[in-house]
Length: 190
Image (cartoon, rainbow, N blue to C red):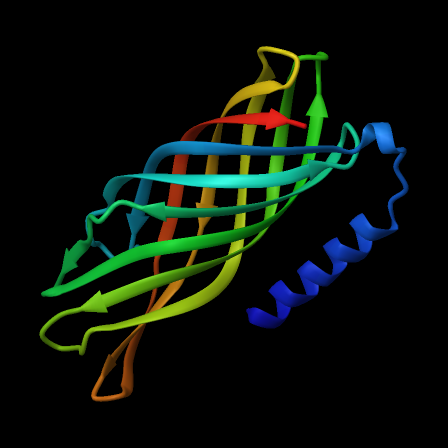
């Protein structure tokens, strides 16, 4: 999985690096998003919701392509399953952005890239451990320009870290945690 993410990143870098754009088409931006993040283990455990946030910065290379970096955190709720508590902490996402402006003020967009997330597990059968893993991330959203340089929007995003549970230094289980968010956001174009 890590090799496919590295290859995807390299291909995105080549694609964005080879594009030519006039200086007036390049539009850097910074913003913040807040929303409901859902953590789901996927094997019958009840999904938990927590408020989370992210800050982001990026560049729209032209009206159709862009790239974005975001750093975020999820609230402190943990999933309690079979006596073990799973929790996702800090995440960083590296995203390519495909967008379509259907009016001068409104656009839809899709995000695809990778996220690095730190997850932790604790419980009676495992020692307290955490791991940082990289995985595929994807999402879609809608953005509307309300003033010259101010945008507001709404989006759905999926981040998918893995957490390894260890007992006395031996890996006893690897859990795929699906972390997704439904968030509102605001950004400022420079």
